[in-house]
Image (cartoon, rainbow, N blue to C red; front, top):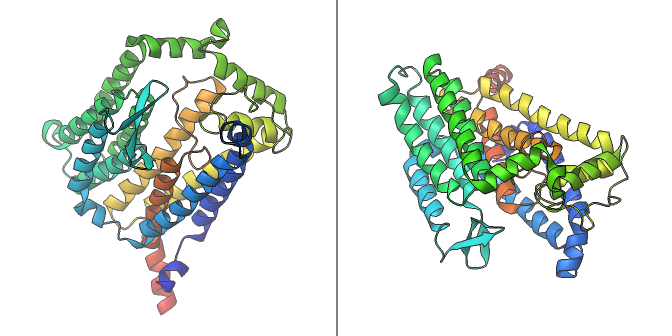
Length: 376
């Protein structure tokens, strides 16, 4: 075990720990006003996030030590389990409703967000299926379509919560796996067109989704309603300037900005750390992306490559959706900023997937070559 720990990719691990610690600091800064008012203690959300971080470190260790090829064998159980929890969360006995959405599963004292675990399952499923078929992807009906039908089922179940943003953020990484698996270009374009068309239709077909889309284009037309959160986010960003007001010095989190410690934590970062805070966040995510792609290209098998690509772009898609919503370039979807926003389920699952990527890095071709050279 000690030899495996010494073999860990220290660069990737460094970036992971840095972004998580930065997230803990900002969760405390963004949440202490709400925590003080709601729970009479300023550290309520911080303590819960800190516990989630410790659990996440354990999960990352499990991901690192447990052979990743086992997930291919467990794939059927993971898929069945994911479908079951998505059905359970829609029932009145187990599902918990918040803000007109039923996305949480209550199991005694524990509350989970099943969609976070389904994200993991779908990446494993697609990487497993297309990793095996990589040289056989010629027939759309027999080789490409069946996994897409399962993805469509998961998409519909999450849409019923309703949560179009999360459903889309699960579908896009699967598309990147398809892209890297080597399916025919015409099949890839057809899937992309159908997917984009479906998302656009769903975004405008429901009145509340259409209102959200229109409000993000012109939030000031309904400043006290649909545009309230985005406008207060703008005020936080504008008042931060280049250097910011300092950690803890933000004003918008004092009851003005909804979801300051979750969806809109980036607005608090910009208000308190200014442009330098934005640069730090971009640097950390960009470093994760570059390092992750480097590991994927050197994985010892196609399953490891597609698994790394899926987990990596799963995180990056959430980053794009979150930053796009805070900046007003995309509709507000409620998707958190990975590793930084408050949310135990998201943090634990993301750290677990990072543990798997660390393990894939340890088994990479580049590492095997360097190990053989040292043994000579």
